[in-house]
Amino acid sequence: MLQVLAASGTAAVAGCMATDNPTDEDTKPSDDGSDDEGLPAAEPVDVDTIGGDPTDVPPPVDWDEPRTHDLTVECSEHVAEIEPGATFHFMTFEGQVPGPMIRVREGDTLNLTFRVPEESNMHPHNIDFHAVYGPGGGAEHTTLAPGDEEATISATMDYAGVHIYHCAVPNMDHHISAGMFGAILVEPRDGLPEVDRELYLGQHELYTDGDTGEEGHHSYDFDAGAAEDPTYVLFNGEAYGFTEDGTQGPMHAEVGETVRLYFASGGPNLTSAVHPIGNVFSRLYRDGDLLSDPARNVETTPVAPGTVTMGEMEMKVPGPVKVVDHALSRAGRKGALAVIDVEGEENPDIYDASGE
Image 1 (cartoon, helix red, strand yellow):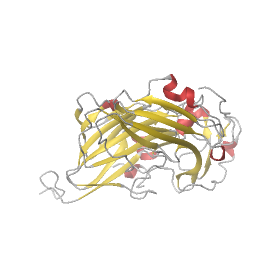
Image 2 (cartoon, helix red, strand yellow; image 1 turned 135 degrees about the vertical axis):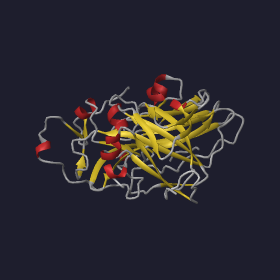
Image 3 (tube, helix red, strand yellow; image 1 turned 135 degrees about the horizontal axis):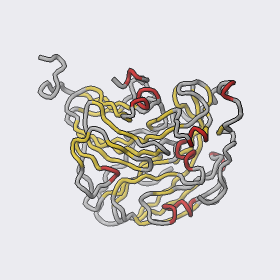
Image 4 (spheres, rainbow, N blue to C red; image 1 turned 30 degrees about the vertical axis):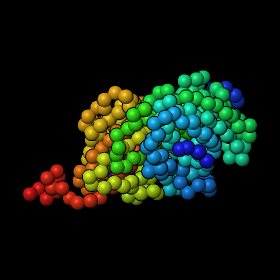
Protein backbone atom coordinates (compact mmCIF):
# COMPACT_ATOMS: atom_id res chain seq x y z
CA MET A 1 0.00 0.00 0.00
CA LEU A 2 1.04 3.62 -0.50
CA GLN A 3 2.53 4.85 2.72
CA VAL A 4 2.29 8.64 2.96
CA LEU A 5 0.88 10.45 3.21
CA ALA A 6 -23.97 8.37 -16.48
CA ALA A 7 -26.02 10.33 -17.30
CA SER A 8 -24.14 9.31 -20.38
CA GLY A 9 -23.72 10.37 -23.98
CA THR A 10 -24.68 13.66 -25.58
CA ALA A 11 -27.63 14.24 -23.27
CA ALA A 12 -25.35 14.49 -20.25
CA VAL A 13 -23.45 17.44 -21.68
CA ALA A 14 -26.43 19.93 -22.28
CA GLY A 15 13.38 3.03 -20.60
CA CYS A 16 15.64 0.43 -19.70
CA MET A 17 14.94 -3.25 -19.39
CA ALA A 18 12.77 -5.70 -21.31
CA THR A 19 10.22 -4.00 -23.52
CA ASP A 20 6.59 -5.05 -23.80
CA ASN A 21 5.60 -7.20 -26.73
CA PRO A 22 2.85 -5.52 -28.80
CA THR A 23 1.34 -8.95 -29.42
CA ASP A 24 0.89 -9.83 -25.74
CA GLU A 25 -2.53 -11.25 -25.00
CA ASP A 26 -3.81 -7.86 -23.81
CA THR A 27 -2.89 -6.14 -27.08
CA LYS A 28 -4.08 -6.49 -30.64
CA PRO A 29 -1.97 -6.92 -33.78
CA SER A 30 -3.30 -4.46 -36.33
CA ASP A 31 -3.81 -7.04 -39.09
CA ASP A 32 -5.30 -10.05 -37.31
CA GLY A 33 -8.72 -9.70 -38.89
CA SER A 34 -10.52 -9.71 -35.53
CA ASP A 35 -12.57 -6.62 -36.43
CA ASP A 36 -14.72 -8.85 -38.65
CA GLU A 37 -15.38 -11.22 -35.78
CA GLY A 38 -16.21 -8.73 -33.08
CA LEU A 39 -14.72 -8.60 -29.62
CA PRO A 40 -14.26 -11.67 -27.44
CA ALA A 41 -16.57 -11.93 -24.46
CA ALA A 42 -16.00 -9.61 -21.53
CA GLU A 43 -13.53 -11.12 -19.07
CA PRO A 44 -14.29 -11.65 -15.37
CA VAL A 45 -13.26 -8.56 -13.41
CA ASP A 46 -10.97 -8.80 -10.40
CA VAL A 47 -11.84 -5.38 -8.89
CA ASP A 48 -15.22 -3.76 -8.36
CA THR A 49 -13.96 -0.52 -9.88
CA ILE A 50 -10.64 0.68 -11.24
CA GLY A 51 -11.53 4.34 -10.62
CA GLY A 52 -9.76 6.06 -7.75
CA ASP A 53 -11.98 7.86 -5.24
CA PRO A 54 -11.83 11.59 -6.17
CA THR A 55 -12.18 12.53 -2.49
CA ASP A 56 -9.12 10.50 -1.45
CA VAL A 57 -6.75 13.46 -1.15
CA PRO A 58 -4.10 13.55 1.61
CA PRO A 59 -4.64 16.30 4.22
CA PRO A 60 -2.86 19.64 3.85
CA VAL A 61 0.71 20.01 5.02
CA ASP A 62 0.76 21.06 8.70
CA TRP A 63 4.52 21.02 9.31
CA ASP A 64 7.01 23.84 8.77
CA GLU A 65 10.33 21.98 8.80
CA PRO A 66 11.60 19.45 6.25
CA ARG A 67 10.46 15.89 6.83
CA THR A 68 11.46 12.53 5.43
CA HIS A 69 8.68 10.34 4.06
CA ASP A 70 8.97 6.62 3.47
CA LEU A 71 6.74 5.53 0.58
CA THR A 72 6.03 2.15 -0.88
CA VAL A 73 4.46 2.09 -4.35
CA GLU A 74 3.34 -1.26 -5.73
CA CYS A 75 2.25 -1.92 -9.30
CA SER A 76 -0.66 -4.20 -10.11
CA GLU A 77 -2.61 -5.07 -13.25
CA HIS A 78 -6.35 -5.73 -13.24
CA VAL A 79 -9.24 -6.60 -15.50
CA ALA A 80 -11.98 -4.06 -14.86
CA GLU A 81 -14.95 -2.51 -16.63
CA ILE A 82 -14.58 0.64 -18.69
CA GLU A 83 -18.36 0.77 -18.63
CA PRO A 84 -20.90 -2.00 -17.99
CA GLY A 85 -20.20 -4.96 -20.25
CA ALA A 86 -16.87 -3.66 -21.60
CA THR A 87 -13.67 -4.90 -19.94
CA PHE A 88 -9.99 -3.96 -20.32
CA HIS A 89 -6.64 -5.00 -18.87
CA PHE A 90 -5.62 -1.96 -16.78
CA MET A 91 -2.16 -1.27 -15.33
CA THR A 92 -2.00 0.67 -12.07
CA PHE A 93 -0.04 2.13 -9.24
CA GLU A 94 -1.67 0.77 -6.08
CA GLY A 95 -4.66 -0.75 -7.87
CA GLN A 96 -6.39 2.45 -8.99
CA VAL A 97 -6.57 5.04 -11.78
CA PRO A 98 -5.11 7.55 -11.37
CA GLY A 99 -2.47 6.41 -8.90
CA PRO A 100 -2.82 7.71 -5.34
CA MET A 101 -2.13 11.39 -4.80
CA ILE A 102 1.07 12.08 -2.86
CA ARG A 103 1.40 15.26 -0.79
CA VAL A 104 4.61 16.66 0.67
CA ARG A 105 6.25 20.02 1.41
CA GLU A 106 8.98 21.78 -0.51
CA GLY A 107 12.31 20.64 0.94
CA ASP A 108 11.00 17.27 2.16
CA THR A 109 12.74 14.02 1.24
CA LEU A 110 11.05 10.97 -0.28
CA ASN A 111 12.48 7.54 0.33
CA LEU A 112 10.71 5.37 -2.26
CA THR A 113 10.40 1.60 -2.31
CA PHE A 114 9.06 0.41 -5.66
CA ARG A 115 7.63 -3.07 -6.26
CA VAL A 116 6.40 -5.07 -9.28
CA PRO A 117 5.14 -8.38 -7.82
CA GLU A 118 5.12 -11.31 -10.21
CA GLU A 119 1.70 -12.51 -9.10
CA SER A 120 -0.05 -9.26 -10.08
CA ASN A 121 1.86 -8.05 -13.16
CA MET A 122 2.45 -9.24 -16.73
CA HIS A 123 4.70 -6.35 -17.79
CA PRO A 124 7.78 -4.46 -16.57
CA HIS A 125 7.10 -1.12 -14.89
CA ASN A 126 8.88 1.88 -13.40
CA ILE A 127 8.01 5.34 -12.11
CA ASP A 128 8.97 8.78 -13.41
CA PHE A 129 8.24 11.65 -11.01
CA HIS A 130 8.13 15.00 -12.79
CA ALA A 131 8.93 16.52 -9.38
CA VAL A 132 12.26 14.63 -9.14
CA TYR A 133 15.55 15.92 -10.49
CA GLY A 134 17.40 12.76 -11.51
CA PRO A 135 17.74 10.22 -14.36
CA GLY A 136 14.29 9.70 -15.81
CA GLY A 137 12.72 11.28 -12.74
CA GLY A 138 13.59 8.03 -10.99
CA ALA A 139 12.56 5.76 -13.87
CA GLU A 140 16.09 4.62 -14.71
CA HIS A 141 16.61 3.14 -11.24
CA THR A 142 13.11 1.76 -10.66
CA THR A 143 12.65 -0.27 -13.87
CA LEU A 144 11.64 -3.77 -12.78
CA ALA A 145 10.36 -6.88 -14.49
CA PRO A 146 7.66 -8.80 -12.65
CA GLY A 147 9.22 -10.58 -9.70
CA ASP A 148 12.43 -8.53 -9.61
CA GLU A 149 13.75 -7.46 -6.22
CA GLU A 150 12.23 -4.16 -5.11
CA ALA A 151 14.02 -0.91 -6.00
CA THR A 152 14.72 2.01 -3.68
CA ILE A 153 15.58 5.63 -4.40
CA SER A 154 15.70 8.83 -2.36
CA ALA A 155 14.94 12.32 -3.68
CA THR A 156 14.58 15.83 -2.27
CA MET A 157 11.45 17.72 -3.25
CA ASP A 158 12.95 21.02 -4.42
CA TYR A 159 10.21 22.03 -6.86
CA ALA A 160 7.04 23.43 -5.32
CA GLY A 161 4.07 22.68 -7.55
CA VAL A 162 1.68 19.91 -8.45
CA HIS A 163 3.31 17.45 -10.83
CA ILE A 164 2.50 14.23 -12.60
CA TYR A 165 4.14 10.85 -12.14
CA HIS A 166 3.83 7.97 -14.60
CA CYS A 167 5.27 4.73 -15.88
CA ALA A 168 8.08 5.34 -18.40
CA VAL A 169 9.07 1.96 -19.83
CA PRO A 170 9.62 1.91 -23.63
CA ASN A 171 5.92 1.26 -24.34
CA MET A 172 4.94 4.08 -22.03
CA ASP A 173 2.05 5.18 -24.26
CA HIS A 174 0.38 1.81 -23.65
CA HIS A 175 1.10 1.82 -19.90
CA ILE A 176 -0.09 5.38 -19.31
CA SER A 177 -3.19 4.84 -21.43
CA ALA A 178 -3.89 1.75 -19.33
CA GLY A 179 -3.80 3.84 -16.15
CA MET A 180 -0.22 4.27 -14.90
CA PHE A 181 -0.14 7.95 -13.91
CA GLY A 182 -0.90 10.07 -10.87
CA ALA A 183 -0.19 13.37 -9.10
CA ILE A 184 2.38 14.47 -6.54
CA LEU A 185 1.72 17.77 -4.78
CA VAL A 186 4.77 19.58 -3.40
CA GLU A 187 3.29 22.36 -1.29
CA PRO A 188 5.29 25.61 -1.14
CA ARG A 189 7.05 26.27 2.15
CA ASP A 190 4.29 28.71 3.13
CA GLY A 191 1.57 26.19 2.28
CA LEU A 192 -1.62 26.59 0.27
CA PRO A 193 -4.71 28.67 1.06
CA GLU A 194 -7.30 26.74 3.05
CA VAL A 195 -10.33 25.45 1.15
CA ASP A 196 -13.42 23.51 2.20
CA ARG A 197 -13.07 20.49 -0.06
CA GLU A 198 -10.48 18.95 -2.40
CA LEU A 199 -11.09 16.59 -5.34
CA TYR A 200 -8.74 14.64 -7.62
CA LEU A 201 -9.47 13.55 -11.20
CA GLY A 202 -7.23 12.05 -13.87
CA GLN A 203 -7.99 12.10 -17.60
CA HIS A 204 -6.55 9.56 -20.03
CA GLU A 205 -7.38 7.92 -23.36
CA LEU A 206 -7.93 4.24 -24.12
CA TYR A 207 -7.04 2.98 -27.59
CA THR A 208 -8.72 -0.36 -28.20
CA ASP A 209 -9.69 -2.83 -30.91
CA GLY A 210 -13.38 -2.27 -30.19
CA ASP A 211 -15.87 0.52 -30.74
CA THR A 212 -17.00 2.97 -28.08
CA GLY A 213 -19.74 1.28 -26.08
CA GLU A 214 -19.13 -2.15 -27.60
CA GLU A 215 -19.56 -4.97 -25.11
CA GLY A 216 -16.80 -7.54 -24.77
CA HIS A 217 -13.12 -7.52 -23.83
CA HIS A 218 -11.22 -4.61 -25.34
CA SER A 219 -7.49 -5.02 -26.06
CA TYR A 220 -4.98 -2.22 -26.53
CA ASP A 221 -4.51 -1.17 -30.17
CA PHE A 222 -1.07 0.29 -30.90
CA ASP A 223 -2.09 1.57 -34.33
CA ALA A 224 -5.01 3.52 -32.89
CA GLY A 225 -2.65 4.95 -30.28
CA ALA A 226 -0.14 6.02 -32.91
CA ALA A 227 -2.98 7.65 -34.87
CA GLU A 228 -4.21 9.32 -31.65
CA ASP A 229 -7.71 8.01 -32.32
CA PRO A 230 -9.06 6.91 -28.92
CA THR A 231 -11.97 4.61 -28.31
CA TYR A 232 -12.59 6.25 -24.93
CA VAL A 233 -11.49 9.41 -23.12
CA LEU A 234 -11.93 8.72 -19.42
CA PHE A 235 -11.88 10.27 -15.99
CA ASN A 236 -10.36 7.85 -13.45
CA GLY A 237 -10.53 4.87 -15.76
CA GLU A 238 -14.30 4.80 -16.24
CA ALA A 239 -16.73 6.19 -18.79
CA TYR A 240 -19.17 8.50 -16.98
CA GLY A 241 -18.35 6.81 -13.67
CA PHE A 242 -18.96 9.96 -11.61
CA THR A 243 -22.41 10.85 -12.93
CA GLU A 244 -25.91 10.14 -11.62
CA ASP A 245 -26.07 6.88 -13.55
CA GLY A 246 -22.39 6.05 -13.15
CA THR A 247 -20.88 3.25 -11.13
CA GLN A 248 -19.57 5.60 -8.42
CA GLY A 249 -22.12 8.40 -8.63
CA PRO A 250 -21.52 12.15 -8.50
CA MET A 251 -19.03 13.89 -6.30
CA HIS A 252 -20.54 16.22 -3.67
CA ALA A 253 -20.15 19.76 -2.37
CA GLU A 254 -22.20 22.30 -0.41
CA VAL A 255 -23.37 25.81 -1.27
CA GLY A 256 -20.90 28.28 0.21
CA GLU A 257 -17.91 25.98 -0.11
CA THR A 258 -14.70 26.58 -2.00
CA VAL A 259 -13.72 23.41 -3.86
CA ARG A 260 -10.20 22.76 -5.10
CA LEU A 261 -9.80 20.38 -8.06
CA TYR A 262 -6.52 18.67 -8.89
CA PHE A 263 -6.76 17.60 -12.53
CA ALA A 264 -4.06 15.27 -13.87
CA SER A 265 -3.81 14.83 -17.64
CA GLY A 266 -2.15 11.46 -18.13
CA GLY A 267 -2.71 11.44 -21.87
CA PRO A 268 -0.76 9.80 -23.32
CA ASN A 269 -1.52 12.04 -26.30
CA LEU A 270 -4.46 14.44 -26.00
CA THR A 271 -4.53 17.90 -24.46
CA SER A 272 -7.65 18.30 -22.33
CA ALA A 273 -9.80 21.44 -22.35
CA VAL A 274 -11.11 21.33 -18.79
CA HIS A 275 -14.29 23.27 -18.13
CA PRO A 276 -16.72 23.27 -15.17
CA ILE A 277 -20.19 23.71 -16.71
CA GLY A 278 -22.13 26.16 -14.56
CA ASN A 279 -19.03 27.56 -12.85
CA VAL A 280 -15.56 28.96 -13.50
CA PHE A 281 -12.16 28.48 -11.92
CA SER A 282 -12.10 31.52 -9.67
CA ARG A 283 -8.40 30.85 -9.15
CA LEU A 284 -6.45 28.72 -11.60
CA TYR A 285 -2.88 27.57 -11.07
CA ARG A 286 -1.92 26.83 -14.66
CA ASP A 287 0.27 23.81 -15.31
CA GLY A 288 0.58 23.17 -11.57
CA ASP A 289 2.45 26.44 -10.96
CA LEU A 290 1.88 27.24 -7.28
CA LEU A 291 4.42 30.06 -7.01
CA SER A 292 2.94 32.55 -9.50
CA ASP A 293 -0.27 34.45 -8.84
CA PRO A 294 -3.24 32.42 -10.03
CA ALA A 295 -5.28 33.36 -13.07
CA ARG A 296 -8.78 34.56 -12.21
CA ASN A 297 -12.25 33.51 -13.37
CA VAL A 298 -11.05 31.12 -16.07
CA GLU A 299 -13.79 29.30 -17.95
CA THR A 300 -11.76 26.61 -19.75
CA THR A 301 -8.09 25.73 -19.51
CA PRO A 302 -5.84 23.50 -21.60
CA VAL A 303 -4.08 20.75 -19.67
CA ALA A 304 -1.35 19.13 -21.74
CA PRO A 305 -0.56 15.42 -21.36
CA GLY A 306 1.96 15.01 -18.55
CA THR A 307 0.58 17.97 -16.59
CA VAL A 308 -1.47 18.53 -13.44
CA THR A 309 -3.52 21.71 -13.10
CA MET A 310 -5.07 23.00 -9.87
CA GLY A 311 -8.24 25.09 -9.93
CA GLU A 312 -10.63 26.43 -7.30
CA MET A 313 -14.38 27.01 -7.62
CA GLU A 314 -16.83 28.86 -5.40
CA MET A 315 -20.09 26.95 -5.01
CA LYS A 316 -22.73 29.68 -4.92
CA VAL A 317 -25.94 27.88 -5.92
CA PRO A 318 -27.22 24.30 -5.72
CA GLY A 319 -27.28 22.00 -8.71
CA PRO A 320 -24.85 19.99 -10.79
CA VAL A 321 -21.46 21.34 -11.83
CA LYS A 322 -20.32 19.16 -14.72
CA VAL A 323 -16.58 18.83 -15.21
CA VAL A 324 -15.90 18.07 -18.88
CA ASP A 325 -13.25 18.03 -21.54
CA HIS A 326 -14.63 20.82 -23.73
CA ALA A 327 -13.53 18.90 -26.81
CA LEU A 328 -17.17 17.98 -26.55
CA SER A 329 -17.29 14.77 -28.54
CA ARG A 330 -15.01 13.36 -25.84
CA ALA A 331 -17.47 14.47 -23.16
CA GLY A 332 -20.65 13.53 -24.98
CA ARG A 333 -19.61 10.29 -26.65
CA LYS A 334 -16.37 8.91 -25.18
CA GLY A 335 -16.69 9.26 -21.41
CA ALA A 336 -14.96 12.48 -20.29
CA LEU A 337 -17.62 13.88 -17.97
CA ALA A 338 -18.00 13.93 -14.18
CA VAL A 339 -20.52 15.68 -11.94
CA ILE A 340 -20.18 17.60 -8.68
CA ASP A 341 -23.62 17.61 -7.03
CA VAL A 342 -23.87 20.86 -5.06
CA GLU A 343 -26.47 20.84 -2.28
CA GLY A 344 -27.85 23.70 -0.18
CA GLU A 345 -30.13 26.72 -0.11
CA GLU A 346 -31.21 28.43 -3.31
CA ASN A 347 -29.66 31.85 -3.93
CA PRO A 348 -32.00 33.79 -6.27
CA ASP A 349 -29.71 36.83 -6.13
CA ILE A 350 -27.17 34.74 -8.02
CA TYR A 351 -29.46 32.45 -10.06
CA ASP A 352 -33.24 32.41 -10.21
CA ALA A 353 -34.75 29.55 -12.19
CA SER A 354 -38.22 31.10 -11.97
CA GLY A 355 -37.19 34.07 -14.07
CA GLU A 356 -39.08 36.43 -11.77
